[in-house]
Image (cartoon, rainbow, N blue to C red):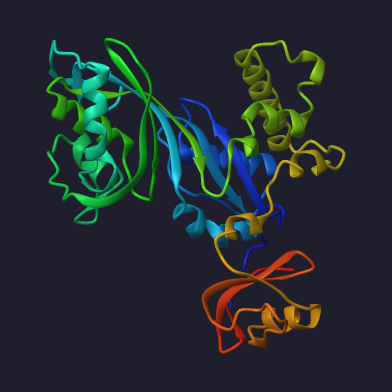
Length: 343
């Protein structure tokens, strides 16, 4: 029997709420964070395009088990639509496909918003991660194919105008899972008869996280390598990022060369993580004893005690001493674990 290879990295768990910069892909961001934390496992809770900035929640270790709950959370985006041009990618990346000299007034844009609020049918962009006959739509589109993507139902909680001038309108939208902001720009431009595309996009929130949870790449590098102190805060972000990147490359070269260094102190960077259980605020919380936690981690059901304990729940999470133990169902006052977390 073949031996399993030893897992590489630390068994660190938690959520890192990255303020992703423009130009970095989501997969690249996950790899960067995994390397900085030297984590065994990492994954994100919803792709953010390279041309977009903002909130990219990245799960480490046991937190990867809670990714679906964050993916289902509401999102808030702030975006700018440039009027007068439609592009193949519905953002700045693709070539112009349609043009118009018309420009909408703020009143015209405002009158259109009710059509894009509530439950609506939306067709994803040609350049999207939607699978068509087993292939990603963007792969087919890059090969020159016109993809027939069926419209689907999405929910828009609110859509507000934040700013407006002759050529651009800035919006803020709160939306549910599966909404494409690029499609909003495309469709509003067509309805207004002037065409439009996204010229700037920033994800502000992913429920349950808020902007107060944001951590930048520069802050992470500083915590990991000590590349910046508080007295250097007047330096530009570009300079900070360049210095941090140089430090990362140097550290990587030392590792590749097999250099022996003092043990790394991860306390500073680990302090930037949000607790794994934060992703489960949407579920009923059940406090259990240490004995019950041991039974649950072995896969056994336990009776939930306490006057306020729920009797029935399709999903709930059990905690012991404030630490997440399991996600499960409660049936007739008994907690039945479905997904268990390491102690």
